[in-house]
Length: 147
Image (cartoon, rainbow, N blue to C red; front, top):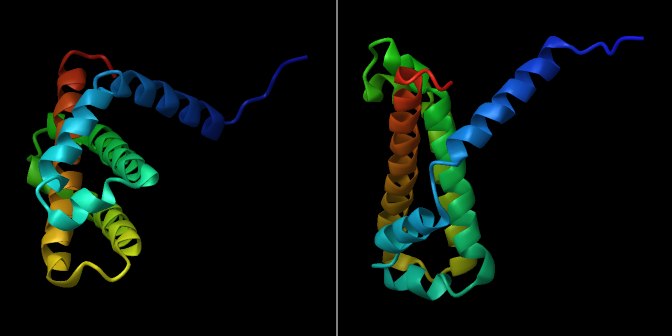
């Protein structure tokens, strides 16, 4: 008797193995520092960070953006610029940014007022920075043939 596996199962298994190896390169300390650096200056967000799930949501979005950047990094090794590659995954990055932004707005409960535009730009910068980090680390892994 042999076990029959499909192409989808093998591809998913390979993807999970790659994601695990890529995630070894970031630490919780890096995640915390980035959250404090980008969101710690806003009065609204410093009061929101007292809630238990807010910081974890930021970590989740950072990890997703990081993995997306690492996944798309193989385009960067073939000569495309980071901006061109980012344009390829613009829809996913916009989704991550909007998800994080609406999560903050939900927890702010109409306290955002004039901060909503700066909050959106902070979310956008946060997602972009983690995407770029994943992209650069993924390119480095491809150059070292660790993919």
